[in-house]
Length: 478
Image 1 (cartoon, rainbow, N blue to C red):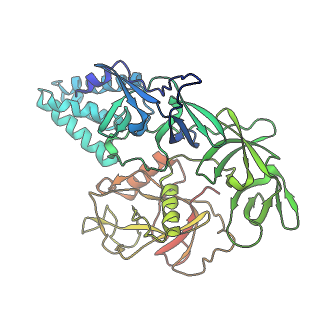
Image 2: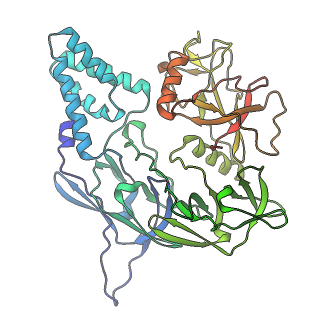
Image 3: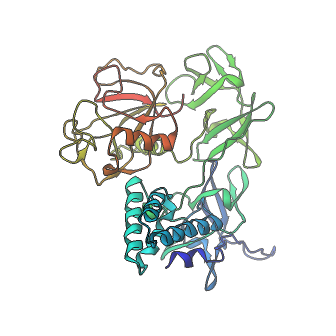
């Protein structure tokens, strides 16, 4: 379908429609859902069994029962922005038809700065009758692909027999959770899928752009922003009263609410929680309450302490690929299964094993090895070749990124082994990048700074005061 035709769609409306029934009518069955918001909250709840998605297409309305929904992913780009982007690409095509070489060259430079969401518009130019336009569009698309994943700017609705694309109409999603009802505007939704079932994998160039991370709540008088994880898998990104999490450590010493950094449920004997607070090492403690209360998504959530898993007062980052990898690693370890086989680009300063200098046209990669609370061990495994590289440059992998902070290792973590030292900072994984795009260390660091900001760079083999090969770092901000 031509890109211009796609943008010309009036709208695609998606709304949960639940028909009202009389008191004597049979109650519809319920369906369980997992909903993730742009702010980072995750809700598990049910909707009535006759709920449906109403999809507006050029051919009219199409009603899709939610019973057949596999996932709905909501794009950060709305129809007006997509139309402007399409117009920009068509404007570049007009410049590529110019007889002036300098005009065509400037247009090609501008095309290299297009966002990944411009990929469908560039692809639509492949059918242009002017071979110059076709060649320039292909060149721009290949440059974009080398920088990372392409994007389809429209919302995605996947059902059992296919995938539908379009735009979400303004409206709300209503769920009934174990702790009360919640209503979320569609524009705040990132993902809706059946509960207990992973969303099907989607090719990177078909994924819509994710909603930008929303700022955390400011924290009104006597309140603090918090990220609370519950035992049923729900996550509440909201606010809690400064004294709303009464924590005791040692022989009953109460920790002031404004000093708390994180509280995490622990296994083993003794007090059930690990408590991290400002100005001190972590301690074991307990919560002096039967229930806790959190403000989130415009409502008050009250739940028993037995349902509470953790509270973190540090900023939440949605879509953190390293955090997702660690969660998968921990689940696999608990189930006795093989850990995820995710690899990532890492550089080495004293060997030609990097994407930009390897004679074998391969780059060195590392993987996640262990997890210990807020810290994780990354490093070489049997697949790593630190002398010539191990992964072909046409592979698209995340870059291991580090920000050196001088932070001390967590209490109790042994970093004296010279091959398992301390990295002294925080690490993240970038978006997937094709190895051939990493033409130099400076280029790799430029990609990283664009994604995470100043202070971040590509991690390397010797990012430790010891011998390298493996080292620990924080995967959560300290």
